[in-house]
Length: 437
Ligand code: HAM
Image (cartoon, rainbow, N blue to C red; front, side):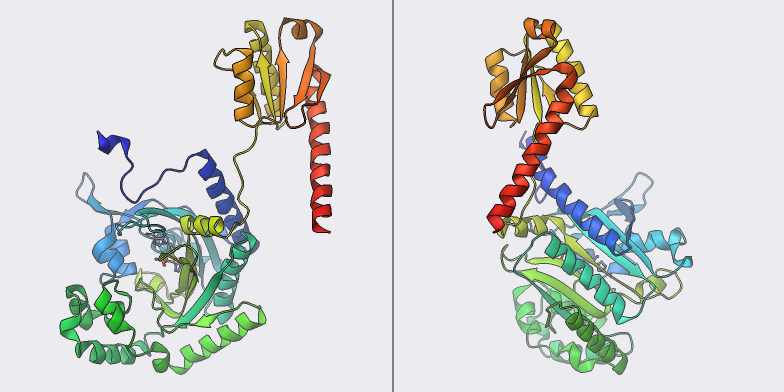
């Protein structure tokens, strides 16, 4: 029984009050994307497993331990997407977007699935806002994408978040660094976890973000990638730093950031906070100049990031950033009797058409119970309509905040509500101004 009354571990429901907050966060983020010229792409929730094995990398934790993979009825291996980049690149190639004017700028909001140890801020189903910019190799593109994330976080009123950047080099300089890692970790081979012992030969970089405690400790003293960058990667990184400084975006260089996915080259970055516990990375991204070619396209540079929406919501709650409530009911029509109920339904419908949140009784409740319900849903106004009101074609509109009542003909209800709403907004603005003085 428990199985059908409890959501699977690491998943969560968003009831209306929570969904209103998530929707506000999503709308704000997509809007900031639009301001930077990013258009929305929607890709399937599942893809061929091979797509993620090839792009994310077969020695990553995501592919080795965390994917939700299954066979469909024809025996094809299918995986629920663990991240958004691979699908966006696949779609851009399949739909020929890269043949159009460059750069191509795509944004998305998508559910992601990873079989991770569930804890606060870490879920098995979570949601990402992501952007992907294809075709630009300049540090200006890295700076624009980082600037987008920075503006998004500021617009949402998120505080105590720091940006950390690093460069992890390119296929020219990476082999020397990998050799240095092999030498270092090779000397500690017996202390590595079995997965990292396997990774040592094929992809020693992955040992740097292993979550096992001993591997993590060893990684802290490992060679540093910045010491191995080629001139081109070093110049790119220096240019990016200058651009961020010119844009007034504070950052710290953190040479331990290598990211958990294989496709990155050159710039990598993370926005982190300490306000929501151990899972404090709210945004991670970087450049991935080799991925499009690896997936069968013509070589094109690319840069992007993914932002965890649940984590953004947690930080916003932790720092008291403004988050919307569910929309409040403007007017609750309270009928007494069947004829009045029909009239109230018709009136409510025309108010809704005019853009008001209007409700009326659907439960055949008593007057007292209806007024109690109107209070519970936070209705700004109520209007009780019985036989005499029907006969008069008018009823008393009651302001539930002030208790004030006024007789309003049904035909003038919309106008009366509009006038009162305008007055209310005016008062709110004046109050806010007085508060600010
Ligand atoms: P990622 O760092 O794996 O990168 O994920 C991006 C963000 O998703 C993280 O910073 C975090 O906020 C959120 N996140 C990841 N795992 C979880 C989880 N289990 N529960 C809750 N939130 C989570 C990527 O996925 C890349 N595709 C980002 C990217 C786009 N790089 C270039 N373009």
